[in-house]
Amino acid sequence: MNHATLANAAPVPAVLDLGALQEFATGKRMRKALVKGGQIDVEMVCYEPGQSTAMHTHPRQDEIFYVVEGRANMCIAGTEHVFEAGTMIRFGPGVPHDIRNLGTARCSIVFLKLATGLLDAVAPTRPGT
Image 1 (cartoon, helix red, strand yellow):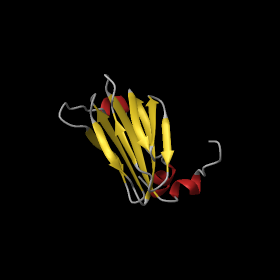
Image 2 (cartoon, rainbow, N blue to C red):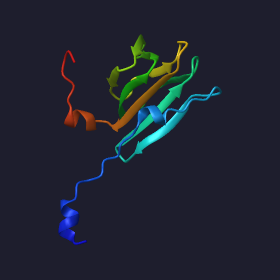
Image 3 (cartoon, rainbow, N blue to C red):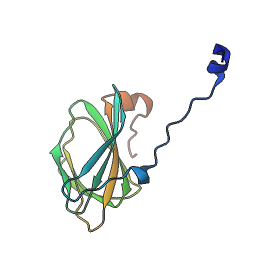
């Protein structure tokens, strides 16, 4: 194969089947790294009913959550929220938050942690969005 052929070859996409990647355990929430990089980390976290992630912050990272399955209860900056499957949540660095599965069904979330400012460089937050 010559270099011209390599240059014209389409990149092979990485396809992640989120349903197949879910893994649950009765003793603790399960975390699975999907993408690890210098400026972005993507993980899936799976919660059985009653499991949680304690209140914490990320001082140098923006964060995006996508609820894949179930319902996630979150306290974000002191305000309680309930997010259903299909919901995406975004907030900036230093925002205190937790995640709790207070329901009777399983909950799984994919989250992205991005270097501060990276997200606003490509997708600025607009008032009202």
